[in-house]
Image 1 (cartoon, rainbow, N blue to C red):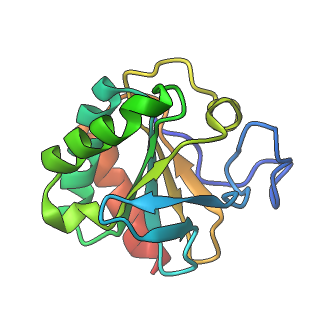
Image 2: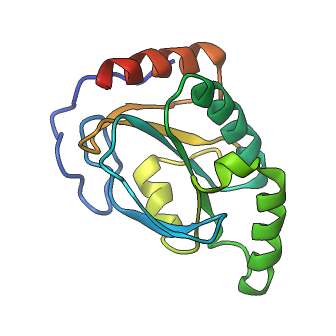
Length: 166
């Protein structure tokens, strides 16, 4: 099932603590990439995909989305939320994640260690075993959101939509 692409009645800037909707602007996401560079999303570039993961299992779902959309030439950013990981273990977990991700994807993989509850609310997280995927336009407005785990037909739809947003 795909989310609607038309903006809802509350389109525009999202309330900081409200669930995000189609048409809302993506709030700022700041963290460090797996290449240890500071990164702030959204970038304001052409249409791109931002994926959020809250568990190891979500990493596999993100990988499937990322591989499929990356082959279509769409910029894909993965936000890896590690706030729930105890602070002394974060470096080890980050290193493990870094080793599991191809070099080319590391600069677009952003580790975040705060605001997990806020992002869970914004994304309506019910299942931490899947990635939460947003397609944003060049103005950082959300134009599509995933409502389930990876399905090839959904990724193909996102790729077509993103091509139309360029």
